[in-house]
Length: 394
Image 1 (cartoon, rainbow, N blue to C red):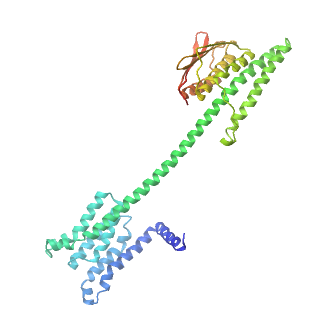
Image 2 (tube, one colour):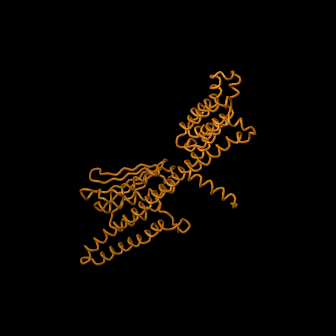
Image 3 (cartoon, rainbow, N blue to C red):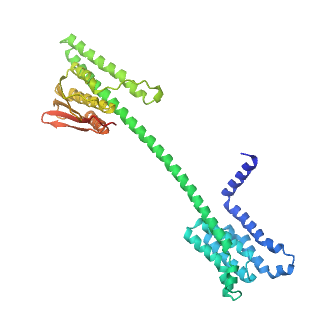
């Protein structure tokens, strides 16, 4: 930006911060402009005859009237128009004394609706001619000629145009603000969804293996003296489960502090890996019966992971709250897969705080991929059923 442009911008900024001062300076400029025609006349006698008009110009433009046009646009317009009409009648025709009324009309048009601004413009345009016609000083044609139609029309249209332009700028700023707020809300929503996803993954990974650790540690303690070899085997299962936790949890926590480019990705577990899940559950002491019917289909990645997690959560609940037995059934059809995990209930209540969180997580996972899930007690068994569709992605 050049030095001159910078100075102009600084001057405009100063005027915006001091509106009353700028209005006073503008009123003085209008006053001087309106008086120029009289000062330029060589005949001093004519000037003397129009001293009333000159005084009216100074009253409307140089006094507090135009200075207050922003604070009270309509009263200022009414007063300046009234004074301008007096000057027109006194001069017997058009006079620069009506110029302050046009300035006030512009302010009215800027600050008022279009209809009211147009009505004020019509009044300013026709009032001088009507006043002269009412006094009988002129005929109808001269009255129209003495009207202030061009100047009043220019002031009105300029004010309306400026108001519309300001409204467009304000609307553009508001749209930009709303767009920024929407982007911020979308970013927060994505962060919340990512946190929820990580929380589900942590629960699925940790809950299952911690349940194994708990069961096997209790078994080892029970067999430590009676059967040291069996206790040692149980402790081996504890070590295996804890090592799995140590391997998987840091990767999930790394999602919270790493960028996408820094992440080391590993294949997500799939329903095809459920055999290893069943084997680990059996080594943990859970007697699992596994049955598969139908022809397996290829599931979308998100649905495949969800199916694995549902089986994992069902076996975990069976290990923690069941009587040591569980039955897993996978039924395939043309639409997808039916999962069912059922186990005899050992404890009076199978819905501990952790189990409730697990069920909530399962329902949210299944719903996210367009499936359905039910879980509850049926007689002496706790049953988890899920329906996952082959053609639905998250």
